[in-house]
Amino acid sequence: MPKSVDHQARRRHIAAALLRVTEREGMEAVSVRTVAAEAGCSVGAVQRYFRTKDEMLHFALRSVVESARRRLGGIRLGGPDAMTFAGALRAAILQSLPLDTTRLGEARVWAAFYAKAAVRPDFAKVIAELHQEALGNLDRALRYARSTGELGPGQDTEALARLILAIIDGLMWAILMDPGPELAGADAVPQLAALDAALGLITR
Image 1: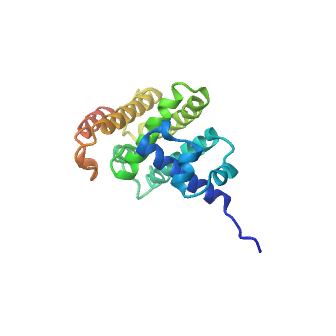
Image 2: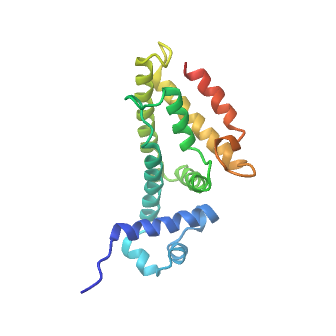
Image 3: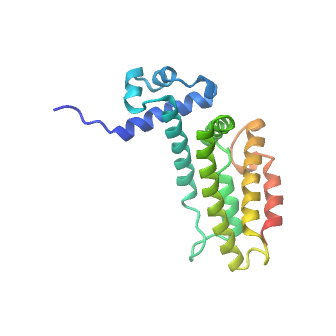
């Protein structure tokens, strides 16, 4: 009998190889050939799962997003075991920042995709959709915090959501430019003092 092939698993394997090439050498180094070499397969094998380089790039971007969603999935608001809003917001932001080698690699990939989005409308559209999703999630969390008294009355939750995303992006770039001698966690990165100062202004 012919061997069964898990096509999604093969696509994820190839996407992971693309992310490693991007992390190590930048987006300009990505090609079907370099990804095939990194994945340990032939060019033809890559082309069976991805018709074009752009299709491969889009799939890889989605895989980075799914990785971030899995990390954020354990942070809950409401319920007996839930964190305070301030604690949950800080935890979510920390999970979004490059504070270990895995997330540092993902942040380098994000940076490469942002650069691509600046000149390619199709990539800009994907980034914009993800940005809107994040804004919606933050706005709902902020409205919940306002209902529980953890956010001051009269606060514009949509404006605060945009501010929080700007803080995340700014801290990500700051850490990418100067990650420090090690990435052992939140306390290892001095830029996070700015995060706590900002959160102190946003939350009660």
